[in-house]
Amino acid sequence: MSDFTLIETLRYEPPQSPDTGFARLRLHMARLSRSARRLGFTLPNDVTSRLERAVAHAACPSRVRLELARDGHLDIAVVPFTAQPPGTVWRVRIAETRLASTNPLLRYKTSRRDAYDAARGEWPAGEADEVLLLNERGEPCEGTITSLFLDDGTGILKTPPIACGLLAGVLRTELICARRARVERLTLDAVRAGSLFMGNALRGLIPARLVES
Image (cartoon, rainbow, N blue to C red; front, side, top):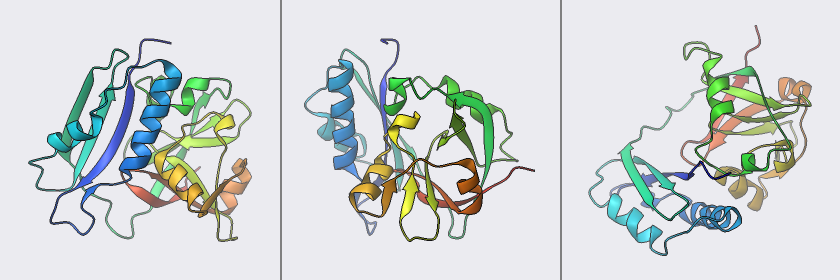
């Protein structure tokens, strides 16, 4: 339980953008602080100011990856980010790789990504934009880089509980707190029948369709 780092991936909008600054920064920092405390990581008290310095010269929307080591060492990488074009619908495939609902580390965003990398590797990029992982009971959990959301026609998105074996995503938390989503165990049949969305804090909500042929 010590050979990993904690990760946060944020979106930054430069001053000339309508939404300036880091998107969902408070939720990212709350998750990082909570994860560090629970897993015994040292968290520097100047993380936010280091993030601000890292994007000081960013002139376009950026993907900012923060990586925290157990001893408090912090790495920040900034690269340009391009949002999905309007009207984008992701093709989602189902992985043979399974998540273990009994693994408590799945609820934290860490560098331990063996299951996610294996699931992504099952499908070439030309056949899937995202890959959905199930747990040992066959319950839908999450994508390799996204949380799962389902619109079953009630107007409130459904998203699986953490107990199924999945990450406490920042976008997921935001939507639950805003009462735009609620936690509910999902079945694969429900996912097939409803309107599917995949999303994360970097990309937002992306409409998706399950492809099983």
